[in-house]
Length: 171
Image (cartoon, rainbow, N blue to C red; front, side, top):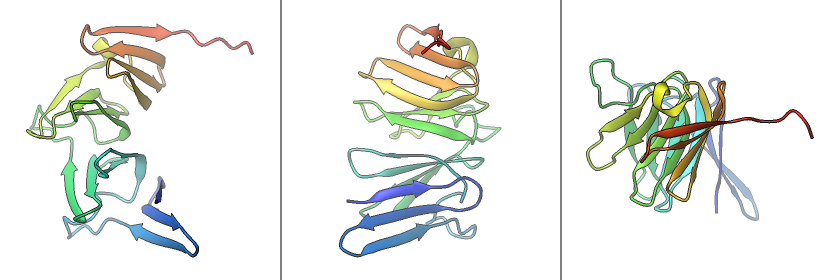
């Protein structure tokens, strides 16, 4: 078993293997190599059921790290490409049962990434009710919970109905 730790700023990504002797590996960006993570500023991490590590970065999109082959795949926002991520500040990643990724970006839209085609469908703020998303949770493959500057929002992507959840200050 491994534990992954990502830092904001410029501190990169660390894999810690807490066995009898602790082993620490650092993964960092090497700008001239495509076989590295895209940025040292890590904003979110998600490991899927196949063992692939999803690394969401602040400012440079997503790196997928195949931990078996040590291969890397990258996804970015590209101004000229409407089917790319809506923003490169990736704050949350979740996979549904179909193996497609839900990607929350800060300052962009909610994204639905099809790994087979590499294309992204964007759900803008006027549909989701959240633009500056900092947290994402997929519930039962049917509803997404978005937390951020706009508060807490429950969004159903099938019906495109969003509901802002009032959070009480009382305890």
